[in-house]
Length: 57
Ligand SMILES: [Zn+2]
Image (cartoon, protein in one colour):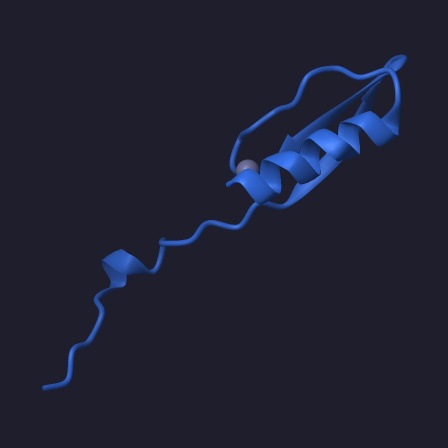
């Protein structure tokens, strides 16, 4: 019995591609899913936020 998955399931498992954007003196992490991190003064902090979001899902 072969089961085929329809096109409705192709959207399952969305990728989280994060980037960091500089806004003035602050740096904000953003994700392709629409998530946005808090404004950070250090880029390393924003990247940490992004990594935390990507791993948390
Ligand atoms: Zn995301």
